[in-house]
Image (cartoon, rainbow, N blue to C red; front, side, top):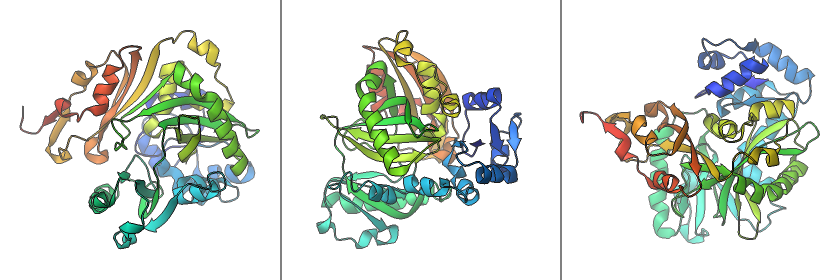
Length: 393
């Protein structure tokens, strides 16, 4: 069954639901998001009974907004505990402490951050909400001089994002401070099948503009990226499975991989692929793999066959977050036609209500080998060239 929530459901996910007649939990929020579309609705009571009576019922959600419903209604099985194990970054670090015994982390209440003795902190480090999403209030702190500057920024961000997402999605009452993980960052969409075996659906390189960058601007996948890392990622996921006993469970995993191939997890997001239907849909645009059908029907990608027709290509999702410095109230609109002209091949453009969510939209793009400059340019762009300010026309 599928739990649908705000802020967004893609046309591709909706078409997949309709084509396969997947049952959708009929919450008020789901009906608001999917209004006007015919799907296989099941009542909340039916869904709750199904979760109670059929152990191992497959669940997928497009949005962490549904986590509260699932935790409150799937009370007769392991689902609530599994959700919290991954969603709370402090609990997740505690779970893996035996695997990574030298990894430094600590939890601290938001109200006590300014009471901390900066002289006792291990710089550099990452600070972020223990329960978070979308890189909100995530910062890298290099030294003592930056500490109070970052705290000021966190105060601003906490106030700005307050009420945008439910507490189950972003809870700024507690933060985690953890060591900076070296290596390149990757995102993985995968699922654990009925037997508890992990199946990789995509591996994406999370590109950054600098060592200080913690944004979500560009995620890229290719034949080379997948072939280089799938064996190590498979072993890593098997380790996660052995620690958690997962089965019939989709995940969006974020890791760092160092030069020696050592994989250290950043976070694991339960019951979904990338947020806002991004990476799950990109897998279709890139490789013709329907991630949602693959999970529900236990299909595995035939990588050798897939890559025969996708040589020397990179496929990316570009997150157009508002890093312009312009407050949303000063912005009239975003020029999607202009930004589309700066890419070799646009696969899809998705516009978002930037005044509500702080992001203009998402691009899905295909890039030929040798033309990666287009990804570098957007990675370092402040997007001002595409923004139309009020009163400027």
